[in-house]
Length: 435
Ligand SMILES: Cc1cc2nc3c(=O)[nH]c(=O)nc-3n(C[C@H](O)[C@H](O)[C@H](O)COP(=O)(O)OP(=O)(O)OC[C@H]3O[C@@H](n4cnc5c(N)ncnc54)[C@H](O)[C@@H]3O)c2cc1C
Image (cartoon, rainbow, N blue to C red; front, side, top):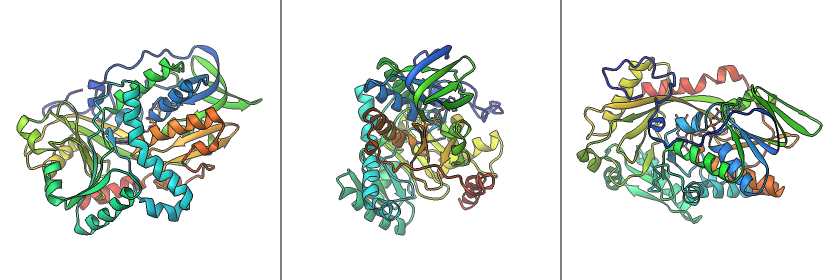
């Protein structure tokens, strides 16, 4: 739904069909039927986001008989709500600090997976000719202080010395790159970029179906049981019986398997897009393309799409309540960052939930009985979940646990989970006050 200042925005934060820029602009996905009757498969994947569709695609390519069940339509979850920034980077760690957490060998594997994840994304797009407004024109994390800039220079060296196209641009170059003058420089990942995430998920689903995976939409799994070496997943219209199971339902994983309850925290985000920038604004704001996400607690992110909409977001807090306040906040943020946008207009505003692990690292859980769960959102899942989907399929196809770069472990519930679910919003409220 397109909005203007005069429009009634009351329904904006309940996601009506057509409310996001991506829903308005993504090419249609494959027509997928709901599950009907009983279906047998070797491997069942639950969830039609980027994790599930990538896994199903690569399983099918490896000749594994695969069924995917999606509750709504492909991309309905975080994948289709997201900002579409391709960021091959950690959130909290660096290649070196990770060694202290995971040990050297595991850290090296995970660093290689994250460092190569953007190439995985753009490689898949090319190989399967996915029409998703993809631009591999760099991802930046700008520094708002000299202290952070100094850290970023060191951090760039850690990646660069490992063979990745990562560097640091100084303040003047950052100003010209972003059209924002509040940064002292920026870390630069040459493999990163931007895309329409809904179009990407739909394209992956189409490719998976072309490779022989059977995908069903409008098919929520309402009961999941294991008996006599088989998983049985029941939907309102039918049942899938499979030897192996991959849970890729993101926030929905918790309801599917008891061991996954209380293992992730919801981070609510308001995503928005401006009306297309004027030619003069396009010369000032991100004229070379790319995407950036800064490091302040109330983080700011920006990128353009192919039609010149500027796409950004802010974390939901207790202090910006209601649709009109959200719209005002979106405008304030654009004005605050871009001198060339003194009077921004918001065309689309939509909510999303990114699920975060307390480790802020991607997690793959082993549930026993040939069942695995991907829980790797953390606000970076477009890129990371693509890499994990590829590796998960390789692990299952070859029977080789070493194919996975994420150290697999049993899930552990978060202590005081009910209270902890409020933490992201509380932190965002404090961050909002300081911005
Ligand atoms: C607002 C927002 C902005 C973001 N921006 C970025 C970004 O710029 N870059 C980035 O890399 N990451 C970003 N992320 C994170 C990224 O979108 C996610 O990490 C990633 O899309 C998760 O993919 P997924 O496949 O694991 O989950 P999802 O996309 O959430 O897919 C899970 C699917 O499972 C389905 N499902 C749930 N329960 C069931 C059930 N019982 N039966 C059947 N199906 C079920 C859901 O309908 C859903 O389609 C953002 C997230 C949000 C919310």
